[in-house]
Image (cartoon, rainbow, N blue to C red; front, side, top):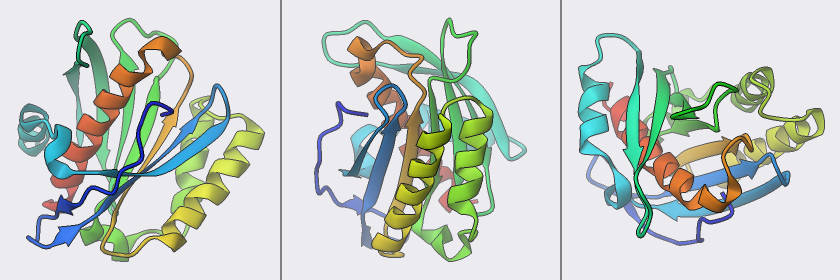
Length: 194
C-alpha cells in the first residue's frame, strides 16, 4: 500500500457523528508496514457493491468488482467477503489470478469495536499465513503491529487492515489500492448495519 498517502480525513459514521477510518497495510514483497492513512466514507464507497452486500441472504458474498484509476484502463477483480461478529474480511483476486488472493482486507467499524475478539490480530494473521500471504517473520511483525494499532486508536475509529500478497504487479499498485479502499469502505458500512 505504498501508494497511499497519509491524510487526516474525517468520515461520517452511520450514527451521524464524525469518526475516523484508519487504514494500515502490510506489503509482503518488501515486508513494510504503512499507516495509519485516514479515509473518508464518501471517498470511494461503491453504492453498487454495498447494494450487492446488503442483498446477500447470508453472511458471505462473492462477485466481481471493477476498479479504475485516472489515466488507466479499468481493472476487474473478484472478491470473497464474509461478515464476522466484529467486522468483515475480504480476499481480493485479480481477474486472471489462479495463484491466490492479491490482497486480504479486514475491517472493524466503530459500532463493533466493543465486540472485538481478544485474539483478533492472531486470527487475522493466522488466516493470512494459511493463505501464504505472509512469511513466518512477517506474520510475527504484522501481529504485533495490528495489536499496537488497536491499542493506539480510539473506540470511535473504524479500523482497516490490509495485507498485500505481492501477487499483483507493483507498477499497478495504485489501481489495487483504489480497489482495496472501495471494498473496505463498502464492507464497513455493510457490517455496521447488520
